[in-house]
Length: 254
Image (cartoon, one colour):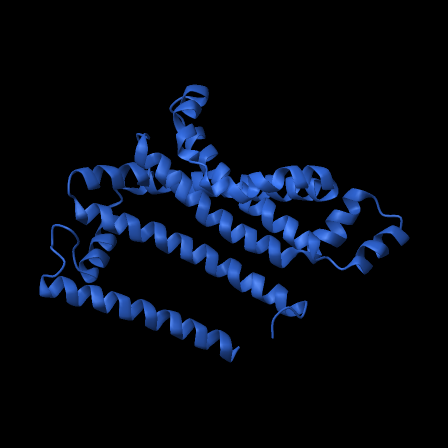
């Protein structure tokens, strides 16, 4: 408990120090106001933006698409990782793809996805899904590799089916690694959704950030960027606490 509070305090202090440095640089004129307003001004603009309600639709669109993409990445990633783990030859064949996946410019598929799905939410969701699913597959494989053999032997002695073994034995045992994959899926899916909206979408936070960027509207751009960061950090903090709790129960952390 004390260690967790110390870590939280350290993170808060680092954030405050970074914010303070930016505030000083902005006040001294080192950072031009046209480039970035002071952090306190960004916070005030964010409060005004949220209070006005003018961006509620864009915020709801992006966050809902990101959560759908994340959910798809987690479900498909866990199922695919479980199946691949059982087929050694398939895993060996896909290892190179997994290790190089994030060198692939996934956003290059966005025009193709627009042709297939039209100017709907689906292209952005699919980009977010493609960004997050491989991270979940890799962490699922890693977690299943670490399941003690005695648990698998127990499943065999109880004559459990493959589905029962996965649902009741192996996946719960690999839960800390699955949560690690979920954290990555959240981040990568949000990046994919916002980036796709930034490029070609007609709605969403990515589109609004792009519009503000092209029009030098810092009062809109930076608060939206901060809002995306706050959402990602909040979700990942909750998952991190859950992951740490599961890991402590299994003796993986002090």
